[in-house]
Amino acid sequence: MSVVAVAHPNIAFIKYWGKVMDDPNKINWALNPSFSMTLDRAQTQTRIRLSDHFEFCLNGNPASEADTKKLLNYLAMLEKELKVEPLERALSIDSKNNFPTAAGIASSASAFAALCLAYLGLRWGEENATAWCKQNLAEFSRLCRLGSGSACRSVAGGYMYWEGSHAVTWQCKLKLFDTVLILSSEKKKVSSRDGHLTASQSPLLAERLQNLPARSRSMMESLKLAENAHGTPQADIAFSEFGRLLEEEALEMHSLTQKAPQPVEYWSDETRKILTALREKSDRNYFFTIDAGPNLHLISMQPVASEVRSLCKEVGVSAEIWEDSTGGPPRFIPDVEI
Ligand code: PMV
Image (cartoon, rainbow, N blue to C red; front, side, top):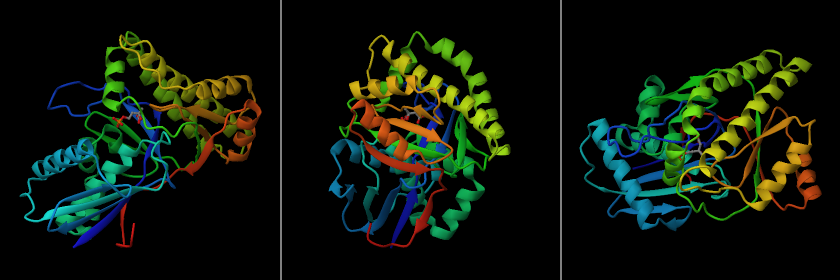
């Protein structure tokens, strides 16, 4: 018996940055609501099989002790939440990303969404699990959150808004593009837990929490305007306003961390070079956001990869480019070699 589930990562437009620390009843509980878009091309595929011995492979290699511990904790938590007896047989789990691990694409989101769905499929059968997730999206989202906060926004495809225990779908038909500039392929040096800690302790947090609802609202209104006026100059104007807010939000997330009592610097010299070049380019139709790493995500209504490639050349930065766009929900796929 084996199942294979696929889930896509998401890119946050309003960042989950700062969480409740050390309260066992508030695991991965964000200090602020966040808002994101699911990706399409990037995905995690996770296969779970019943086996005679436990096995956990990540991207083709045996997982580290730390990752194995995280996985086993999560599975134990799932059993408890679902009120199911532990399985009598061991699990063999194989999880693979099709995107570069250090791309600055939050792989923990797609990893836990795929793992959670695969586990439900193994326990209940694929059809039942698919129907349950559809009918109980809030609960599915909550279960994914227990693995990694951002995973609760990878449960439905399109756009998702997360507040409190789970995320909900935000309806918008706009297809957006995410051109990821991979400036460094080094693994993140600071864990996301430590990143969230810097945000929770930052002197800038109180003001951020006050300003966020208005920014979030304006961002969603701009996207709605761009959706309704699609194909007209009004859509471009609305999208530029969305982009202004997107960049303001990314810069705020990073200044929170740069000004924390134990500051963390995620940007590299290359990140700064690109940021300077973008600042000088006033006529752009693509806008940046940056997660907990040095790489930039450029969000646009049209594909912009070739333009972005020229920009990198102009400023002498070598970057790998990952092109993505708005994607769909997690699902089961036939058990082929992954
Ligand atoms: O889910 P975590 O703990 O890996 O946190 C993700 C945090 C950011 O990617 C930086 C922002 C976000 O909202 O996805």
